Image 1 (cartoon, rainbow, N blue to C red):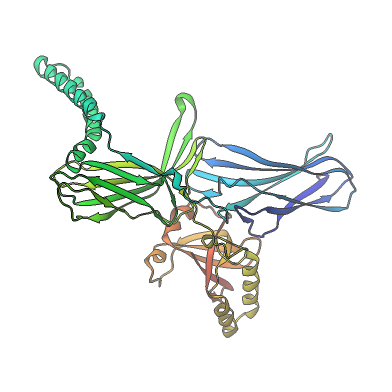
Image 2: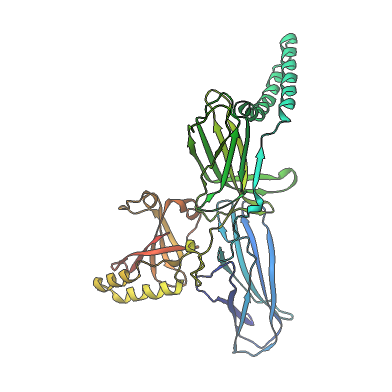
Amino acid sequence: MSKCDLQIEFYRPDREFRTGETVQGWVRVRVNQDVKCRGLTLNCWWSTHGRGNATRRNYFQQTLFQGDWKAGDKYEYAFEFVPPAMPLSYRGKYLNIDHYVLARVDIPWARDPKCREEFLWRPGSDVPLPDAAKTVIQPGSRHWPRIIGLSIAFILVLLALFLATRLSPLLLLGLVFPLIIAWFSLRSYLAERKLGDVQWGTLGQAVAGEQMPSLLQIGPLGNVQISAVTASIRGAESVVSGSGTNRTTHTHKLFEQTKTLIKSPAIKRGEVIELHPEITFPMTRAFSVDLPDNKIIWTVTLAIRLPMWPDWVQTRHIQLLPPPARTDDHDNPNPAFATQPFHDLIEVVRHLNDAGADTARADKIIEQHADKLYTVSIDLDRIESAEEGFEDLDYLHGRTLSGTLSGTKLLVSLQLPARYNQEVEQLDRGQSWACSAAMLRWEHLRDRIVMLGI
């Protein structure tokens, strides 16, 4: 038996805290034998795990106690700290980012007792907003055409040499790759020969679920008709495993979508036109991350489509930021992660359990709380396809999570929209998952609350 047992308890049962807040809790010690404690220390850090090389960084350390403990006694030590704003907690396919608290007792000539617990670090009241000073305007390049022209001339000379001397076909194969590179470098230049100067201005940053300001200036126009302006948004996890010659990059696509922003704009030859493409990023928890060997990357590719002519294409890396917080909700300022605390939900579900087969009483309780959002933390039992009956296709194609409310034996069924599919399908039985949800109904035959994830 260990000389003492440790337990870490957080101020919030769902262990979910937000940027701008202080993480608070207690380390509880139960002493089994007399102990001379040289130091009860608290260490906090974030770390990555998954397919890429692990990265870890400590950001807080504190000594909570030094002295003697008597057998049979119990002690409690409060702690508080503020984690760095980034990185946030994240669950993905190749990349996971976790925040931990570790309590350890330094005991002379004995194995040190320790206890480690994870907490969730979510966006809150101090999330960064797009910085207007980071505006990116990139005009068309004028020095490339000469370089490309010389490259093509060189390739044509080699091709003529091949035809004259009938060299190995490998030489002709080697010409294919330079031609491909030349084409991708040349097409925007060829497009600008028709379009005139093209400048695309963005902030270089965007907020999840919101439109990114964008300005596209084209002209003076030549003899050309623009068929459409399209934007392709792509998000991906990019992690690196191994080192040296064994270094390998793994990429997992999180999101990819192409939309036509402007179709056949009315234009005249010789004029300069200004367009404001509406580029909107999806609501997601996969915000931009740039850690050693572990990244979440978002890009936007803007294309001006020209009939019977090469398109003008340009790609930008965009820093995707969390959605802004609601300043009028101090307890839970971010609507993306609920408004009512988890312990309130537990109390409501216990009242529903007490109602038993009294469906009228249960319906009244549901009706009283139907317009509220709650933080839901579920200990997972199984994942299934969505139940029948949803008119909203997003939920019809989503997933149903069944399990218990974390830290209790209260049963819960959570209906999630399809945008969460990739995230939850990586979960295993027994893992915890949290989101915002509203009450849908009470199933008294199973004594289970059914909730709708937001």
